[in-house]
Length: 449
Image 1 (cartoon, rainbow, N blue to C red):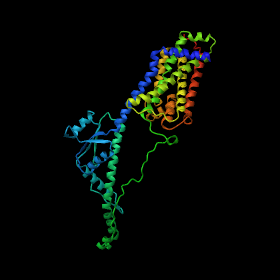
Image 2: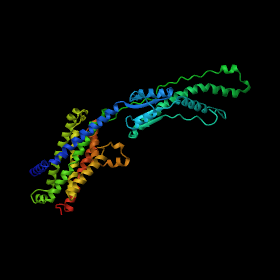
Image 3: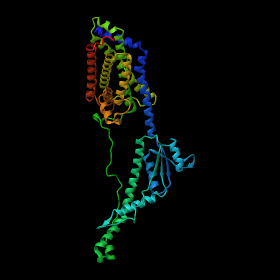
Image 4: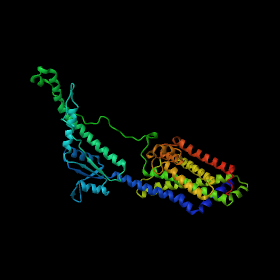
């Protein structure tokens, strides 16, 4: 035990003299947490505020007014119909959108309502037929489909464009259904009379026509099916994660795994200057040396964990972000941090054993951690990645850790619900240590040649 404690003390002393390494381990993840969280929080707040939309209603009738009222009812849009006190023209609006002053402009051309109702009536007439005959709306080609114009800022995201287009289509579909029912209620009695007159031939009379009952439509506009949103989770206590709950564990894991750089470098330096060989001449086993490094860096990782959690609890609320809510299972959180620390330490030991130079270890270590973080959902949510990237991301230790943290934070999970992720990180640690052991003794990595 004394040898192990001495080894741990040696590692902590060496790391304490590495000021740049300490900055990387503690300052970098804190800066990332603060910057990314505040940026995302600002984006979320901007989504809550109303979007200013240029709106030119040259129609001024049923369709134009209906779309304008529907946009105002949504509560997400502020309609702008003039700039600097001047009424908008199409060219002025297009220039303003093109410069990025407004995200989009909706133009309802003159005569849209007339063309809309003409197409509805044609569609209604074309839908009736008596026997083999079919009532045609007009001779020749049908009327042209009325067009609405939407001009978008080219920098807008595709999802925003699709959302606007979907909203407009939904509004128009509702107006179209109502107008079609009106046309149907008007045409149906006439078509019934025509069909009956044709069937009765010479027997048809005005008295018989008056005896046909009137058909009236009274359409109920209430929705047939309603949608109720609820969040599913363990014990029914789940909630949507805040930017703080997403970023604090994500960048904490990123910082933990960045210990592979100083840990790998420490191993390589000991091999290069012969310290490892001298240590092995003493009555101390290689297992004790490696265990000392693992214990030391696990301590560093746990200090990182509590430090960044404290930033999420105390500093981020001062800067305007929500306070970190960590769920109810503190034991589960500590186990996640411990297993993630072991996995990061094991990877650092493996990297320091396999790499021949400090440059190899630092370059490959940093790049591999960034890639694992990206695949694990630290930088962007996993669900927006291509399917193949999502599959690869399942093998990232950072993905296991982040999934476990979010399970406890927002899904109401405990130790039992995160056992697969805990076991995956622990087995990753065991595997990396075994591979490092193999390289050390089977490939003769006690010295650097």
